[in-house]
Amino acid sequence: MDSLALQTGAQASGAEWEHAAAAVLRKSGRITEDQPDALAWEKLARRTLDGIEISPLGTPALLADLITEGRPTRAGAWDVRATYAETNAAAANEAILADLENGTNSVWLEVGAHALPVGDLAAALKGVLFDIAPVVLDAPNDALEAARSFAALVNGTTLAAGTSLGYDPTGSHIRGFGAAGRPDTSALGEIAQIATDLGCGAVIADGSALHNAGASDAQELGFALAAATNYLRKLVELGYSVEAAASLISFRLAASDEQFPTIAKFRALRRLWARVLELSGASVPTTVHGVTSRVMMTKYDPWVNMLRTTVAAFAAGVGGADAVTVLPFDSELGIPDAFGRRIARNTSALLIDEAHVAKVADPAGGSYMVEKLTDDLAVAGWAEFGLLEDGGLGVTGPALRERMAAVIATRQAEIAKRKRPITGISEFPNLAEALPERRPYAESRPAVAGYARAFEALRDEPIAEPVFLATMGTVAAHTARATFASNLFAAGGIDVVNEGRHDDVEAVLAHYRGERVVCLAGSDAAYAEWGTALAAALREGGAHHVIVAGKPLEGTDDNCAMGLDALDFLNRTREKLA
Image (tube, rainbow, N blue to C red; front, side, top):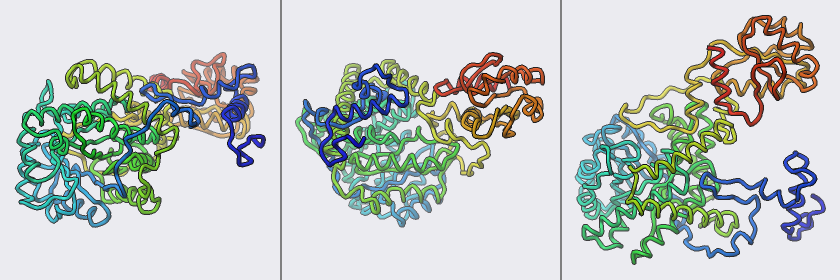
């Protein structure tokens, strides 16, 4: 690396980077000596679930044929928006007022049979200053009644910018609300009139609904555009001008812990909606609400959710979101408590006030990689939008579901093989953890299938009998594979017995207590010297199923190594233990 021109302060060439990267990849065995240096680009690039390649190195060449435009328009700090799914009005009011007094700017309130009853809206919002704190409703089954109740409650107040009645029958349909068939938009006219009279937003095109159903970034963008365009058309048919109709519509997108795709997605949405409005003969600022991904959250080791949501909130803020909701780390355990809400709102406070993320408008602008990814996502999202437009909105038809199914299958396969590791779940699980207890959500609140669901289902039903780790050789010799195997078994709710150093077959047998499943863990040299003999001795001692950590070994029944389908392996092992 010392020979790189970069070390002297000069500009390194692509060829120099290519040569240096290839040298490192040869040391790790990912490129052979006879393969060209240029292969480094392919080896280090990665692809999103939309098939978009992310270059390992941002260079001016990535933008050679692109004209970038449509910058994020948010100036300054984003709106820190807290969400509430309380079923009790007093508890909701206490939480809302506490959050508003301690750093939250606005309220996103779930209303209806799945959360707070519409009749309790006034009690839940008692003491809220509607001219200062925006309120966004989420009433999928009771949107019209909630809008009427809210209008009566605010009673002529000049509402804070960002207030919205939150009507979104399309997103609600995806989330599992409403009757079968196409989304029912029959309440749009009256809700739009109420919003016009109040001077607030009426409709939210919620792409996060599709994201939480398993969609890719491009599919989420296309869906949000299609929903918003459908609402725009219907409002124009009701007599609104394009500008007036567009001013009633805002967007919501999911922010995940995939930092750069999230930044690009938020930036791409502004460009895409600006294009829709341009084709419609209008120009209205786009308002985007980012919410941290619900499906990336985990029930087990929930503390790691703080890290996931921090990255997601950062990405949404950098991507230009006008408002950001950080889901509390304990959201998957039940209704978050005061500590969970505090950490959630402080995540944005730290990013805004201490990290100064909001000081610069469009901080990712000019990054070759982010600009290219933004453009690629915009193109892919526009293509998805076109597919949905061709078949109406198509949310109930098979075409969108089939495209999503392909994405979901790919993602789950990568999770199963731990190519998409989930910390605390598929990697580094803690079987001894005690989960915090939280009050349950309303039974009618639809659940989502989180990315960790398959592993968490195994953890929900832990196996009583452990696997015996037949550790071979010194601690230094067996620790790497013993640790790998222990973590793998724990990901499936299986504990292990590890007695430490064993220098021969007799030493292992002295600690063996007849466990039905055993796993050999040692070095390749130890396997070659006495691995087969140890497997035979353990089988004679009562083992029904012998596994080896590493490559397959004669005399064993199964093996575990990097790259295996962990879920398949764990299910096989659990069957032997059951």
